[in-house]
Length: 113
Length: 110
Image 1 (cartoon, helix red, strand yellow):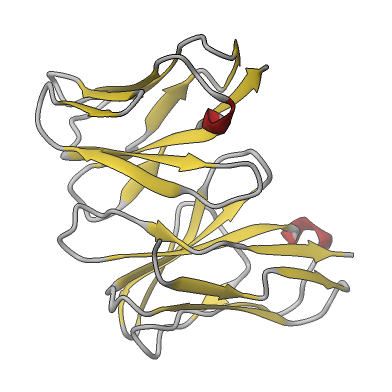
Image 2: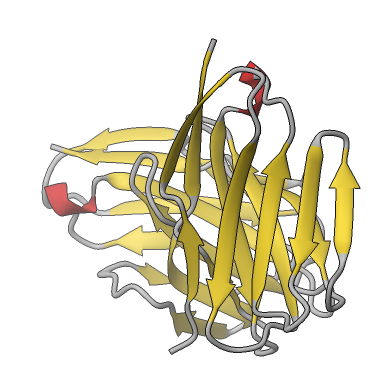
């Protein structure tokens, strides 16, 4: 199993609240990702980073933002949560030159009421 | 754009029957990977295929990469209840970013 950790695992929050989903990996991977996935559905890449101070938007537009101040840490923030943000958010990482083999965290299930 | 199409979207099989999922890309891939996601879980890496025509086996699972490196398949022989989940292929187009297929959700009828 990969050493990539997400907190919280489950979160129920009211509309308009600000939330931060934490993600940390201890493998020293340069590349980190955030995917959004509704139950049983496709994986949508919303953010990725190839290293410290590098962040890019993914294929699916998202109102969330990310930061990469340290190699091991890649938090995702929603400034004002809405019910449409209800989903599972999966953090992942990979090592440059590994053929992009991706290791996923266990996910954060977000419910906005 | 660079897309990876995966079929079928759903597959229901009797326990003991075989199962196959297919991935297709319109452009050549540098490699293709397969992941399994159990219900309620997160995707877990299964295997990577790199060479044209490559075939790899993991117990009852057989993975193939097409000669043109544009398609791939995962075949499970004699399915078991532990095989339940969603299987994703993920294509690498050589641009350091994986593109996931839409996934095939496998359910097993005991």
